[in-house]
Image 1 (cartoon, rainbow, N blue to C red):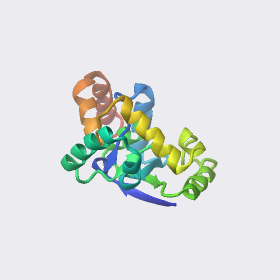
Image 2 (image 1 turned 180 degrees about the vertical axis):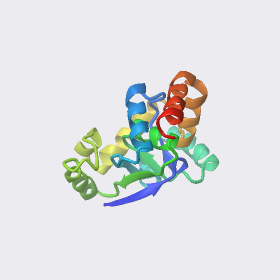
Image 3 (image 1 turned 90 degrees about the vertical axis):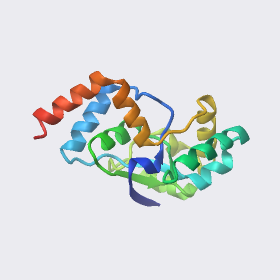
Image 4 (image 1 turned 60 degrees about the horizontal axis):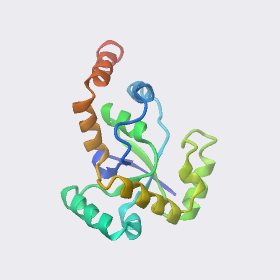
Length: 172
């Protein structure tokens, strides 16, 4: 099991746009700006996931990949964390699942708070890849964390006005 510091253009985000809770995003953002640790984000290398993508989805992914050559990892969980880290200008610490034993090791990190309890921990690597295929089949488009964050900034001005207020008045 490896961890890696990633840029937001290296991670293919889930299609849960926009994030479900502005308050959770704001709390993570505040923690990031205060320099507090944020739990690892589980990812799988795209070379592994692509083997499980349906042919039509694979074709769409290849178009995305051509336009986003730095996107190397599929995110499994962590939309609020990755968005907050991106907004705060921080790198994203990812835990990379490459084998089933990596997932077993990650389970042990829940007790330390380094990883959040999440559904990915209850599935094998293959099952997580199959879940990603189903997820993207429902919404057949791909975006990096960076692209998703920029889209949210454009389309959710009230949330980002609140975050700018925090930045100006609390994190001077």
